[in-house]
Each structure stands twice: as C-alpha cells, then as structure tokens.
Image (cartoon, rainbow, N blue to C red; front, side, top):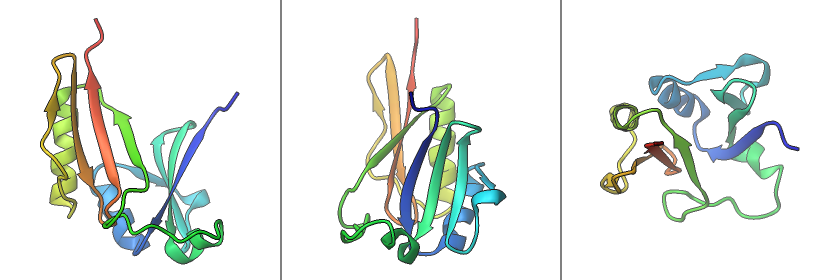
Length: 131
C-alpha cells in the first residue's frame, strides 16, 4: 500500500510561503526544493507538502487553479500531541502573517483550531484525547 503522502499546493510567492512555514517550525528538503517548488517536511519519510509556484503547479493540470482566498479547494488537517501544541501553532501562524478563519472548537474529547496561510489554504489542527 501507499507509504508516503505528498500534498501539492499552489502558492503565489514561494519565498514568502517558505518563510511563513519556517516560522511555524517546518523544514524543507533541499533535494526537492528549487525556484519552482519547495518540499516541506511534515513527518520525515511519510508526510510532505509541496509548495509549488502557480506557473509550475499549472503544468500538472488543465483545470483552473483555485484562488484559496476566494474558494475552498482542500482542508488539510494535522494531528497534534496536545491542545497547547494546537494553540501554539495557530499563534505562530498568525504572527507570521496568517489569519484565523474561525474560533477554536472544543468537543471535550477533541480540540481543534485552524489557520489560513498566506495564500488562503486552510490548515486544521486537532488534538484528540485517547483514553
């Protein structure tokens, strides 16, 4: 079965997007990073996000690229180890220029919050208490 996931997202300004995610603590794999795209490592060896310039992203599809500030194309959700980690990442995102699309949601057993990156992509963060 599948061993890795690569989420591909179109970005308007690659350098600004890289700086935004570096401010959240993410690193980039230089082997798969150039002026057209950057490979953000979420979980070494298994989860990666490819930030691709719009021009390069367009080479993979004949469809119109969605402006994530106007329409939702995808909701990316990552699990966190604690409520504090959720809130810390959202705070870092806001400090780096992101915005909060909605208030946090506390369901008792599950706590979630979200941020939008510089291009409007929504990143959900969730902590689930496992008994």
